[in-house]
Every structure is written in structure tokens, then in C-alpha cells.
Amino acid sequence: MKGSIAVIGAGKWGQALHFALSQKQKCLITSRTKRDIKNFVDLDTALKCDFLVIAIPAQEIRAWLKNNFKFNNHKILVASKGIEASSGEFLNEIYADFVPEKNIGFISGPSFAAEVIQGLPCALVLNSSSKELYDDFEPFFPNFIKTYYSDDVIGAEVAGAYKNVLAIASGICEGLNLGKNAQASLISRGLVEMQRFGKHFGAKKSSFVGLSGAGDLFLTASSTMSRNYRVGLGLAENKSLEDILEELGEVAEGVKTSEAIYNLSSKHEIYTPIAKEVKLVLDGKNPLDSLKDLLSN
Ligand SMILES: NC(=O)C1=CN([C@@H]2O[C@H](COP(=O)(O)OP(=O)(O)OC[C@H]3O[C@@H](n4cnc5c(N)ncnc54)[C@H](O)[C@@H]3O)[C@@H](O)[C@H]2O)C=CC1
Ligand SMILES: O=C(CO)COP(=O)(O)O
Image (tube, rainbow, N blue to C red; front, side, top):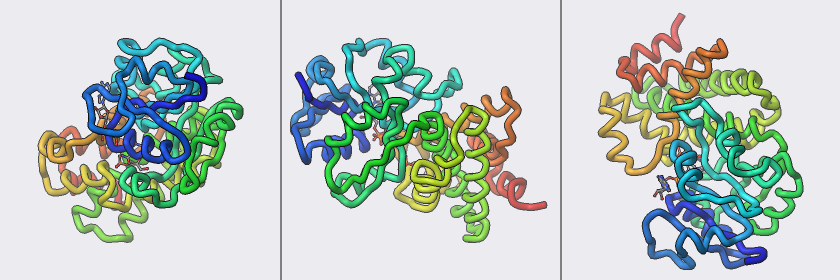
């Protein structure tokens, strides 16, 4: 189907992107389980589209690609934010086994699905080594989403994944009533930390002070609308991770991504104290001890 577009994955973000991409043209959507959404189709029909937007959780992507995907000259935008914990691979590395680099881009920037699905204003960065891919996708987006182009794929990947881990830390800080000073210091130190981590993998500094880095971090690390922030609040209340995730009922990418960052930082000897403490708390360390270790001399 020439010029046709489909969203794969009908979770919160997939549905919000489907809403946005349906404003100017018909947009199909598919998911593992059938949903009562306009223009819902089966996977085979969706895969016949030229343009795909894939919004499935980071840890599921490799298996999904292996079991379901056959490249047919598609142009693809990846909407997920995370790092695969089992391998430590960034999403662009996973997709590289299935899709040529010039055919793929990665969405980043501050964008709660709950606001996008109401048509509220939002700015997104479409990151790809191919400006042509950006030019192809840009006309699909509605007026309420302002899009920017960046070629810093790894910068967007690191920023989008890392901010989820920092949102957990910030939620812990809030839940422990440690105050706004402590929270602001965690968030700003987190920004420096994610930039240091990203630099190691070739990310550009500018991505961290823009929408993909500071923009998404400030949003996610300061709002109960964020699932990752709510994980932090639950940890501060000494709830078990199992209970927190069951209550959430949606993906919180920071949980597995903290493990990936911890392992990558150990392997590459990168100083990432906040991500490390988040991993330790998720493994059972007392949250207050952890925040004390981060915040006191
Ligand atoms: N919700 C939001 O505001 C935003 C989410 N994202 C990212 O988008 C990704 C998806 O998040 P949400 O849609 O919000 O999560 P969600 O928890 O609402 O939905 C996840 C969806 O993925 C599907 N899924 C899970 N495992 C699958 C598998 N093995 N194969 C196929 N489909 C599978 C589920 O059926 C569900 O429809 C995450 O990486 C998240 O970080 C990015 C920006 C905003
Ligand atoms: O990435 C997001 C907003 O940009 C959504 O964050 P959460 O997954 O923490 O809700």
C-alpha cells in the first residue's frame, strides 16, 4: 500500500501515536491482542504498509522482530525508550540486524501519551542518520506535534532510556520527602551523568541539553504521570517491585534499563552513581540508605 502508515503496538504510546497520525491521513494500528480501535488490522495487513511506527517495550523488541518481522523496504520510526538488559544493546543495534540504517529513525522528546491523545501541544525529535527519512515522516505528523530532525541516534537512545532510570530515583526522593532541593540536585546531576554515559558511546552533547535529554528528563522526573516516577514512589514506601509493577499494569522501562546501564557502566568503567543506586534499590537496598549515599558527604 503506497504511502500507507501503521502503528505496531497498541499500548498507551502506540494508541496516542495512532491518534496523532490519524489526524491528516488514515493510519492503521495492530497489536498482539485484538482491540476495539478504529482502523485496527491484523499484523500481516499492517506490515504491508510502507511506513511503520513501532511502539512495543524495549525488552520485547528482539523476539518480536525475530518472530514477526520481514523487512520489505519499510521506513520505520521506533517509539520505544530503553536498553536491552540481557545484551546491553541499544535499540538501534538490535534493529540493525533487521533494517538498513537509512530506513530507520528513533522518536525522542518529552511526550506523555495521555497528553498526546488529547491533542495537546508537543515537540518530538525524529533521530535518524537519514534526513530523507525525516522528510518522509514529517508530513504525517499533525499540527499539534512540532517535529525536529537530529542525526544523533545514539544521543536520543541514551537520553530516552536513561531518563527513565533517573525518574525512578527522583520518585524515590519525592516519596521519602527529602525535599525539592534534593530532587533538583538529583535531576541535574542525573543530566550530567547521562551525558557522560552517552559521550562514551559517541552521543553529541547538544542532545542532552535539548528536547531528548533535559526536556524528557525534566518531564518524567517531576510528574506522577510518569510510570517510572511512580515506581520510585512505590519503592520509597517499601513496596515490593512485584506489587508496584502489578499495580502499574504498564511498562516501566527504567527497571530493566537500570540493569543494562549498571552492566554497561561496569564493563566500560563509566561513573554512573545514580543509575547504580537505582539498580541496588531495585535489588533490595533500603531506599533511604541509597539516597543518603547519593546526597550526603
Ligand atoms: N506512554 C508514554 O507516555 C510513552 C511511552 N514511550 C515508550 O513506548 C514504549 C511502549 O510504552 P507504552 O505503550 O506506554 O506501554 P504499555 O505498557 O501501555 O503498552 C505496551 C504494549 O506493548 C505490547 N507488547 C508487550 N509485549 C509485546 C510483545 N512481546 N510483542 C508485541 N507487543 C507486545 C503490549 O501488548 C502493549 O500493547 C516504551 O518503550 C515506553 O518507554 C515513549 C514515549 C511516551
Ligand atoms: O517517556 C515518557 C514521556 O516522554 C513516558 O514516561 P513513563 O514511561 O515514565 O511514563
